[in-house]
Length: 95
Image 1 (cartoon, rainbow, N blue to C red):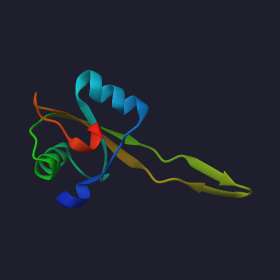
Image 2 (cartoon, rainbow, N blue to C red; image 1 turned 135 degrees about the vertical axis):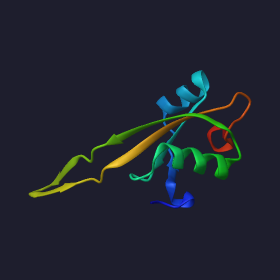
Image 3 (cartoon, rainbow, N blue to C red; image 1 turned 30 degrees about the horizontal axis):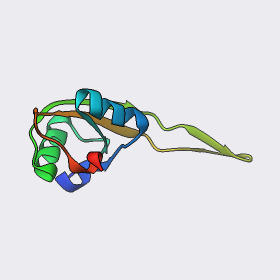
Image 4 (tube, rainbow, N blue to C red; image 1 turned 60 degrees about the vertical axis):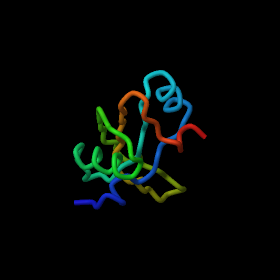
C-alpha cells in the first residue's frame, strides 16, 4: 500500500486537462498504480486542504518502444480525475 506522499505522483497538465478544469472543475493526477479511490481521496484532501466530491481512475498500459533492434516497454501507469467541492481549488493548476 502506498503512503500518502507517494499516492499522488504528479499532476497532469495538458491542453485537454486544462480545458476539463476550466469547464467542469476536474483535476487530473498521475497516481500510484496500487492506490485505491479512497486512498487517492484522502491524499488529495490532506495534501491540498480541499474537499473531494468524486474520484475516477483509469489504468493505462505501457507502450512498446523500439530503438533499432532493441524492443522495450514503457511502464504501466494509473490516472485519477478528481472533482472538488464548489469553491475549492488547487493552486498548481491555476498558474
